[in-house]
Image 1: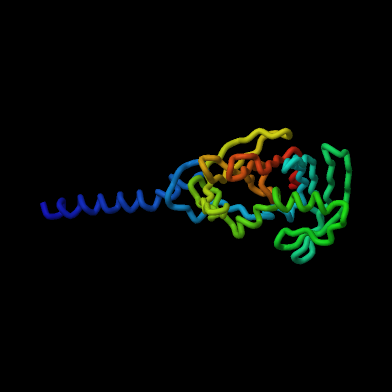
Image 2: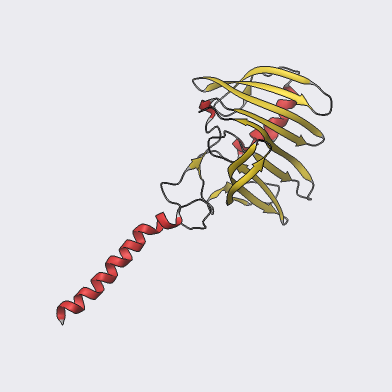
Length: 222
């Protein structure tokens, strides 16, 4: 009788330990809500995959501006990387093709006067993620991605969705990072090994569209 009384609690303890050890593996998959971020979960940071020299083409809309911006990532030397930037303005028909350098902080270097207005818009749209996501973040639904500051509001950004998303060039598995201000959702999508977000839509405090952009062309060399 004494052995039996000891054996039952020991079995319960072993079972609880097994559940505790396996919990992160059962919940740590993209798309499942969780409170504990597993150590083995993938992460994303600004510039991830840039070393593979991808080609990204965006359709950018901001305050009346609308243009295609193609970013061809070229050779990397130290903390700088060459990027061929091709602009096609949808409204004026202007076409600009220049090779620039981008620094570690993802700020363009040596910008000429004719392409500067478009670089300024890119800084405030596609590249603006560098100002809010300063370090690697977990690609797990429920993970917090930091706090952003909009006037008196300080909403927390959170990864809220993982799914296949349709683009002009095909499907990508994307992760949605979003927050709300005055019940209006602002968001951007990221994909693994794509250096910048692949889609975004942001609004002003009063609800008007501030800017949006979407990846319309992608080439990821392997």
